[in-house]
Image 1 (cartoon, helix red, strand yellow):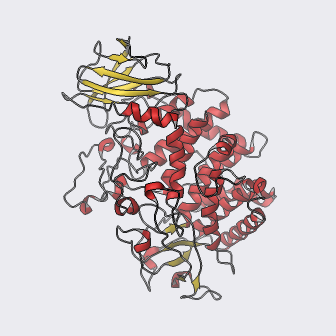
Image 2 (cartoon, one colour; image 1 turned 90 degrees about the vertical axis):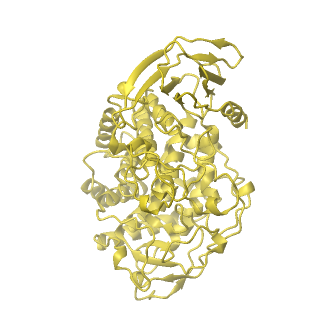
Length: 567
């Protein structure tokens, strides 16, 4: 709790926006040896910066100031390097009447990283939440009487068959459970776990399973894996695309929801994501058979069966518009290209089984370049499989080359950028879920490159993305709930809106600035404060395009911040 106490004391100083002057900085904290950068808007800070040291001394440091003009808004800003502030503690940075705090700590990300993972406990479905403090709630969505939708019917499971499909995580701001996104989220976190397993072995998130012999992150994954098992048709190996109500529920608590829930259409993408994550889980849970006996063998078997179904049904894509009796209007996670899913699943199954067949399949679907991971583009998770397998593995070298090429391109021009970060310099950096897929996942890629190179050359740029995420950006928001002195208070999240607790769940990453503003006709009296790509963010519950939360986004936050904390 030392870090959290220091952080609260530090952020209590706040950021007082006066005289049109604004200071943007990482509101959570920096490592002692990390560069200390603030961005100032509204005045040239040269000669005006004063710093109150942790011991109370006031100094006027020799700062480096660089003038910039945003290519997105045309706004003029100043990037200020505060120099060597390496003594741990809370600093206050002042310019006239404007001031802000800056936290320096040997583990600045410890609390926020833990909260990002613990969030998954708070969004568990089908069980009461009893270790959540103010966020405790009654169980909802037991999902023991889920119906097979006509689109999912098979000879041995006709439409209307009742099946049991409990547990799992609520997907996002809604209460449904989607295989594509659940498997992707687990896969992303397992990739980080494999790289930093010693760190995760020590990380306690205070969940019901914390006293067993398995790391908490794996226990949390198991809660969702148990649900995923139920989504495979035991008669043919195909996997249902999602478990859902026909329409989204209102903004009520889980135990107040009463719509019938269904499993709907099997899809090739859901089935392959399932195969990949079960293969990885079979391998990574093997040392923890004391807590989960027989799991690895079972997971391996269902993974191979799922891959066989996908090969037999390669064009079984999800088409929600074709669903009827009843029609379904909830999230689609539609995808009409399964080559990346085949690559990830084949790579994971080869690592598990060593079978030549899966190696040949992985080579067949090998991508031509590295792209940051997303639920609809999982080739990077396949690349991470080969990078984790090591230099002696068959596809290590091409995956390594693709990753390094991507990272080298990503850091081009950072020294001239407005916020001194790889992310946030182009209009295309912003959109639905951009803070996860383009900021956190880019940071994760940079950390992979850093580890592969055996240097800290890329780590600096990964930390800059963390700075951007946590407040050194155009809006001045720390985009993770419960942290910093300006963070989202009204995320698009049904439980947080309905639970009568003023503060939202801590540790949630919101989607972020989205110039598409797909929700602008649903905002009522609320309006976006700006149309500039990096300022198109609205902290209102109605803004599902910029302020929703989702498990895949939080998974990227876990992977990124826990890796940084492990350093």
